[in-house]
Image (cartoon, rainbow, N blue to C red):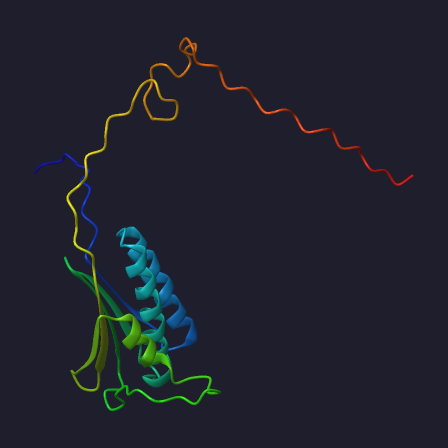
Length: 191
């Protein structure tokens, strides 16, 4: 038996799944957890911002329209090479989402319009009974090979290199002068 312990850094998981209560608090927690998961993966800002809105909308719909007493909804995030997929599964397979044309003064009814505007693709998958999964996908920008960064220059202050930082300035170059001090303000007293 090998008693050696080794520390190994594992790559971050490309998926995330969690069961949440179908309440406004559960929908808010879904958005917060998704935001944190995406931040750990260094997703582009445009993608993560759109995904936050999609998670918030789909989770709110699950908590509002897919709610059954004692049944949770599931949030799944899948980070594939070219796509971020968001899935929200609830237990109301009989109540499929449909777009509505809200009146201008309506307080709700615009959620799927937002999903349609933000997602590159979205849809509904039924099953297993009594569940349905509403999903949305965002295309990820292609991964570029790492660009080479030029080596730091020892003569440039703030370049990350060490060498001449604390040495005398080169000949012909004037040292930086500190800005003049501001005039002292007079203290206010209550007299």
